Image (cartoon, rainbow, N blue to C red):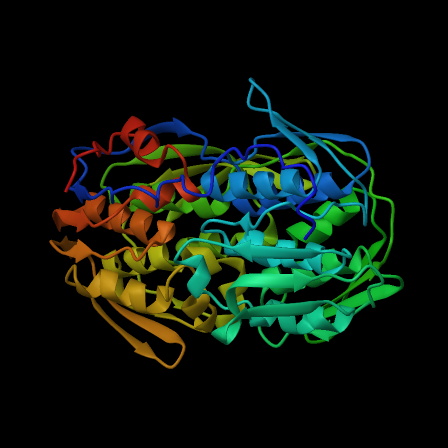
Amino acid sequence: MDPSRPASPQPAVPPAAGPHAGAPRPLLVSAAPGPLQGEVRVPGDKSISHRALMFAALAEGVTRVEGLLEGEDVLRTADAMRALGARVEGLENGSWRVEGRGIGRLQEPADVLDMGNSGTAARLLAGILATHGFTSVMTGDGSLRGRPMRRVTEPLAATGARFASRAGGRLPLCIEGTGEARPVSYRLPVASAQVKSAILLAGLNARGETRVEEPVPTRDHTENMLRHFGAALFVETDAAGGRVIRLQGRPTLSARDVSVPADPSSAAFPLVAALLVPGSEILLRGVGLNPSRTGLFTTLREMGGFLELRDERVEGGEPVGDLLVRAGALRGVDVPAARAPSMIDEYPVLAVACAAAAGTSRLRGLEELRVKESDRLASTVALLERNGAQVRVDGNDMIVEGAGALRGGGTVETRMDHRLAMSAVVLGLAAREPVRVDDTAFIETSFPGFVPLMDSLGADLGREG
């Protein structure tokens, strides 16, 4: 890197800042004092927010983004795109303005790119950086530095980029990008929207056609947004239900405004809480309904949960709608492995619902949970066991013996995992005995304002444990 380059603008969240930099925020969660009631909109979809900033930075012209998730994970992406030369501004009315650089025109960053806790940001950005002819370095917090990156760097190396990392392919990661990238043809060995997206993002600056085969379809926000910004992208479905995505390299992406729907993964937490707390009825407004993200809704309906869609519509190329949720008894469920990609982030809170249901639930094909912010499979098992539930792991399946009620009474180690922390809060709201959550600071990475939002519905949180 050239030390003579001018410094990048100051980031919105300095590397030393953020919820994980200070003392832990414990929380003691007792049963909700009454039914949860009201209408709320959860923050914007995290997956789409990351992509909106990245694609806007790669487009020519000015993109306006509405509904962006302003959690730390996404702010790290905003900082990274600034460091790479795009103009990224948060406006007073909650909108964001991005003046893009165009394909292949990003600049070498003057400093290390700190991605905080965000695996999505790190893996997708690796794809962009791999096909720009400069050297860059990415790091993250303690959790992100423990997560594997080799699943991304191995296919990206076929472009001509070179990578150096810690043992096991872990951050910090040095990327020596190539300005003459080769297109990649790659078949995903495991279902991963992050790996698929990294390869497609690399393919934007490669001459020729980039091709990705996914035997099991994953969330398709990248494909939708590529089309939205004007890329030539084609998707074919094979006889077995898999997909082949083909992208023509070196397109001209043109600035297009983006409206970010409410995040269905964030909606999962008030949704499950409302199903479990007796007498509850809530309306979740403007929730994203992309079919690649609604596996939890399907599963909860199979369990007997009352979920009613209202005012379905399309905003910014993504289907959205309002979701009415009403409390009621749940029954055990057998969730097929093929559904895992459409609800991979929701399994911890689904496991809580299964523990409160009547009968046995089997959640299949959860190997991807082992490489999330924590080993979410092990962490979810510990969450349930410490609060009186019977649960075991059989290979890559989780089996939960539902007791028709939740006992609680345990202390949950969140292990720097925001979704585990929120799942523990949901469990506490429906349990007989209070649940102590060791740290809720990381919730801010994906769901800023989670505790006030839950309190607005009647949860009565906010008591330090």
